[in-house]
Image (cartoon, rainbow, N blue to C red; front, side, top):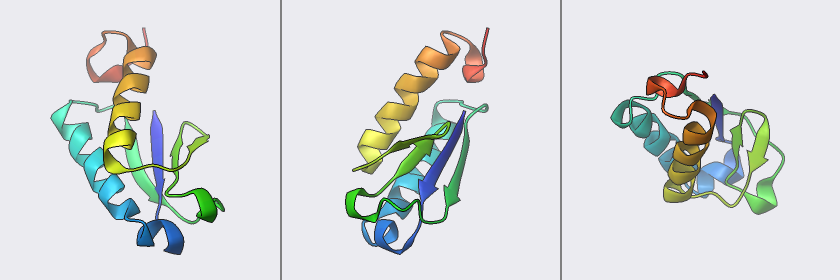
Length: 88
């Protein structure tokens, strides 16, 4: 699973760096080795950011807790019971 956090100017002003840090910490905490968490440039959703892109799908109005919960839920659906979130 690829997760990108927008770190463009507006999203950064809305604390997207905290989202990025939370997701990187969650990756270690929840043993999610198959989740790639990185930053990305502006997604063009400045009015509705911060934005997080999960496997190509843009999620907006994000905050650290909301992003964390969304990733954990998607990982459960994606990897149903496999350690590290690997597909069956």
